[in-house]
Amino acid sequence: MVAVMIQGTGSNVGKSMLVAGLCRAATRRGLSVAPFKPQNMSNNAAVTADGGEIGRAQALQARACGLEPHTDMNPVLLKPETDRGAQVILQGRAIGRAEARDYQGLKPRLLGGVLDSFARLSAAHDLVIVEGAGSPAEVNLRPRDIANMGFARAAGVPVVLAGDIDRGGVIAQIVGTQAVIDAGDAAMIRGFLVNKFRGDPRLFDDGYRMIEARTGWRGFGVVPWFADAHRLPAEDAVDLRTSGGSGLHVVCLTLSRIANFDDLDPLAAEPGLRLTMLAPGQAIPGDAGLVIVPGTKSTLGDLAFLRAQGWDIDLAAHHRRGGHVLGICGGYQMLGRMIDDPSGADGVAGQVAGLGLLDVTTVMAPDKRLTRVTGTALGQPVSGYEIHMGRTDGPDCARPFAHVPDPDGAISGDGRVTGSYLHGLFSDDAFRAAFLARLGAASHPGFKAGVDAALDDLADHLEAHLDVAALLAVAR
Image (cartoon, rainbow, N blue to C red; front, side):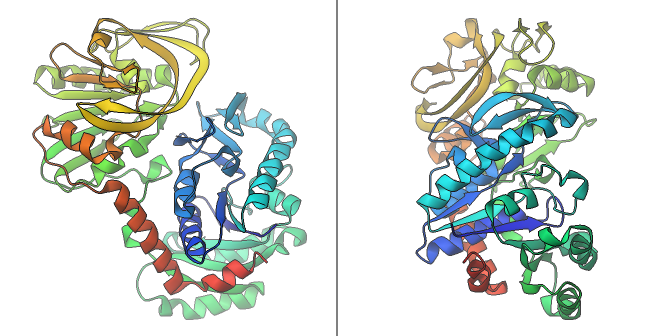
C-alpha cells in the first residue's frame, strides 16, 4: 500500500481541489494514481461506470488521474434529505436513511466497506491520494470515525494537514488541531501546508516558521489563491456562483436540497451569458430569458420550499411573459401537474399538485435509476447520466426532449417549457450551442477541454508552490 491522505483544519479549506491537483501532478510523473474519499456528504453525485454513485469531487479527481469514476473511490456517500437525516450510499448503492444520531451505529459496518474499497484501489494502483472530510479537530466525532483519523489509523495512511489562510487564524487552525487530537492521531501527521493565500506568500514566512516550531511538523509550502478555480466543477452548493456576462439572462433557483448542480458549470463558463443563482427570498427577475429548476434530493420538500419563496407565482408570470423554463430531474417532476408518492419514497405518502407547466404526472417509487446515457437532443449528440426515483408520463411526453436511446423528458405545446431527467447535458458543445441558439444566444465550444486544461494549470500551480515530490514521498 502506497498512499497519502490530505486532511483539513475545517470544511471547505480546499481539500478536494488539492487532491485533484496532486492527482494530476502524480499522474504526469508516470504513476498509476487513484483518488479516494472514505466518506463524503454531498448531493452532487456522479454515476460511475459500474452503475453506482459517488461524490462529484471524486469523479473530477478520477478525471485528473485519467480514470473512469468507480464506486471504490468514495465508498460512503451521505446525501442530505433533511436538516437531520440523509440517505446512506455504501459502495454506490443506497442502503437506507439515517438520522445523524443513528448514523453513528452504522459506522462499524461502513468501515468494513471503506477498508475493502481502499484495499482494492491500493492493489490496482501505484499511489492512492486520500481526501479527508471536515476536520480531525472535531474530536467529539472521533469515536467510530471513518472519515479522518479513524480511517488513517485503521489503514495506516500518513496524513498531511491543510489549513486555509483565507478564512483567517491559520496558525491557530494548525497548531490548535495538534493541541486537541490525541498523541496517536498526531503521530499520523507528517506535515502541513497552507492554502488560499492572497498576495505575496513570503509575507507569511514568520507565521510558517512559527507553525513548524510549535508543532514540530515540516511544512510543504504555501499555496496562493488559485484564480482559475471557477473553471473546475464545484463540489458544494456554497460554491455556486453567478457569472457576469451581458447576454441572455439565465436564472437558476437555488433550492434547499439542490443536487447535481454542476449541470450549470458549462453555462457559467459561457462569456455571452449572465447566470444568476437566485437566493431564497429573491424574486425571479423580469429580464430572465430562461429559468432553470434544477435537480434536488427531495422533490416534494423542495417543491414546498419553492412555493414558500413565491417562485411558483414568479414562474407562472415568467411563462406568461414569453419566458422559457427548463426543469432537470427533480425540477422536471415539479413542473408537472401531479406528483404521486404512494409509498412515501420521497417523504410522506400522498399526492401533491405540481406547478402545472407541463402536462405530465410523476409516480415516485423506492427504486432508483442510475445509468449513463448517450443519444441525441435537438438533433445533436448528447451524453449524460440519470440519477432519480420516480417515472414520469403524460401527453407532453409525446414531444420528448431527447432520445437516449429511449425517449426522455417532455416539451410543452408552446415549446417554452422543457423537462428532462438528463444530467450533464450542457457539457456537450454541439448540444449546448443548439439549445442556446433557440434562445437567441451564441455559445463557445471547448468546455470539456477547458476542464482538463484547468486541471493541468492546477497541477502546475501546486508544483510551483509546494514541495510536491516531498509530499508524495510521505506515501512511501
